[in-house]
Image (cartoon, rainbow, N blue to C red; front, side, top):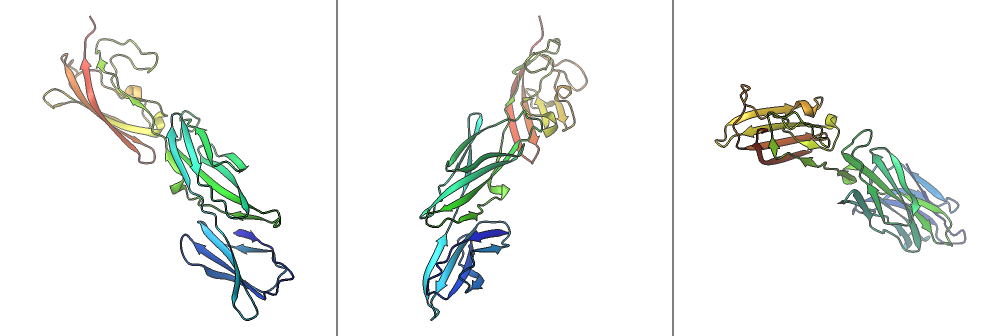
Length: 280
């Protein structure tokens, strides 16, 4: 429910009032009629979404004399800027008022980022190695209208908070070695893979992705087809430079096709080449 606060001049000769509401760019419709000038707020159980409200005042003849029309239309934009999400929203400041914005990150690690701020931008560091390793970041933005000094009431206007419009997907980096040595078990300290383990290095929690890695020789024949499920250790799902029957592949250039599926249905596809070389 939304509580709308307002103030009516007790000495006005106006006799009737209408609280009206519109959604999106639609027409206004009456949600409440009243004539009591001492009423200073109205509660509207409007549900979720972006709403516009106004009060229409009429004289004793029923003619519209004045209309208040406070509109807040806040759109949140999310872009990637290096290792940060750059958040920006339009300044939807109505006439004779100031808007104080509140920004919250809903996912991952729900946290309040800004409270009652006049800022219209925020830079949020992207942390994909956090405890939950979530790849989807969701934010909500709301505006609090502070009326002009001669109207001391505070009016809370909800902004669009549907996660579909306020979420961003953090795409992890995927790197592939350029060679595999079937005879070497030397481990790369940075990737954790041995030189006889050809496979993707992904900077995300292995529980959040699966992949399929296919290796083809120069004749386009499949020499290896490796599948990693979300519960598998990626170090156990790699190509050792050997044929399916265990024989070692000849030293030559092979083509690979990699398809990675992240949680939430996000997919990345990579193709390239890898060389089989043997330790001297």
